[in-house]
Length: 103
Image (tube, rainbow, N blue to C red; front, top):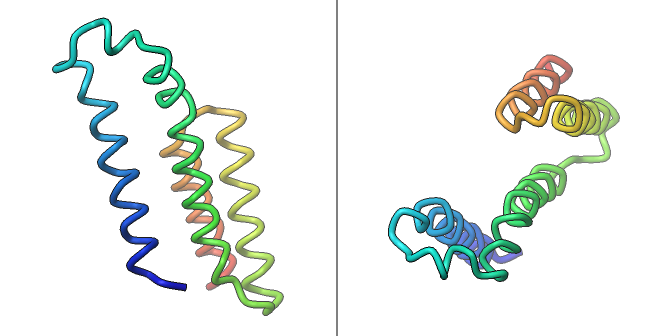
């Protein structure tokens, strides 16, 4: 797969995310209250997390150890995010579970 394309997608999503987060301090209220802005703000974090999951899971080999560790890390992230609604906690715990199972 072309990594320049993927890098440009991540760059565009990053810029869009930064603009949405910090735009509320710059833009007038009528732009902030626009329905398109609300929809983007509602779905963008889930889209970014989905892209991160896809990028992490695409390189898993058919080796049983790595596959089980990757799926356990994914289940940890999903379970903690549903339970606690804290993205940082779920990502860190999922990474720790994955690394402990690999090593």
